[in-house]
Length: 306
Image (cartoon, rainbow, N blue to C red; front, side, top):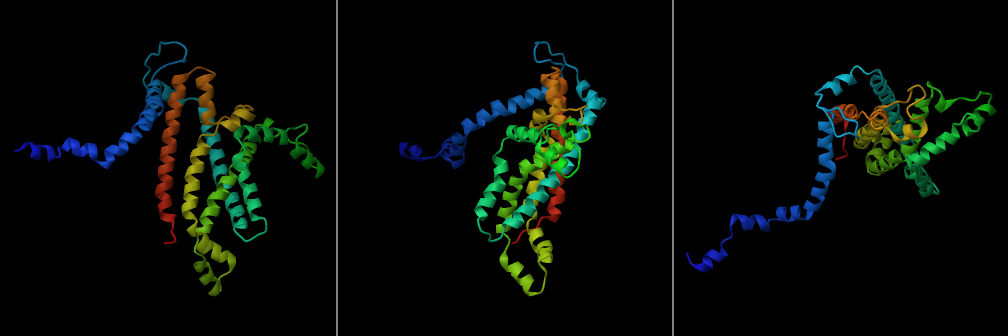
């Protein structure tokens, strides 16, 4: 074989170096390395921590096996946190979707100043959870809150709201629905723009009433957006923390103690990090299972215009 022929031959190593996938990985590798260091390693470290006893302060972290996980199922506060999280999720997710859908349908019409209305609906998404908590603390204050002032005007006595074990969780539900409604409106408005007008016009020509058109044509074609909101809002609801931390700190009498707040309390207030890590992995499994169920069931009810 001549020297020219050897020089022109492309070895597998050179072919790999010239391939598009190699070039792509070369560009993406800095981000992949950063994600591996700051994302994957903490996940693996917390998994190891869940089988240890650790207070995050002393280097001695004895291996305790599944003790932290067994302790979870005998902890009444954890059972209460799970119950409060389920109640919150069951109210927050459908509440946000229904309110968002109603406002989106109302705004999906040729109204004057419609851009102003749409901007106003989305403003709630621009409000941080800190501001959201402060606003609702002011609104629901038993002494000078605007909500109690309005109730007094119609003859209803002032309510304790966030100070009441029977009302606090529902006030947080209302607060977060208000904060997330703008997101639901934007998603449903985008989905409504994609509903073919000819289908609705054909149904109207056949004599269908507006509500029947909405129920049989519009609503099924919004199902992809509904599934997206269902999954996204559920994941966020199961990780509720900011609003509880800012308003009630899990009280009164543990009435708003949800899973992530209890996890934070155990890790950084009680310095029981191994137990908190076990709680985090149980929550992770709950989210994975619920999301898988939602996708599996959702496939049966999702319709596309094509």
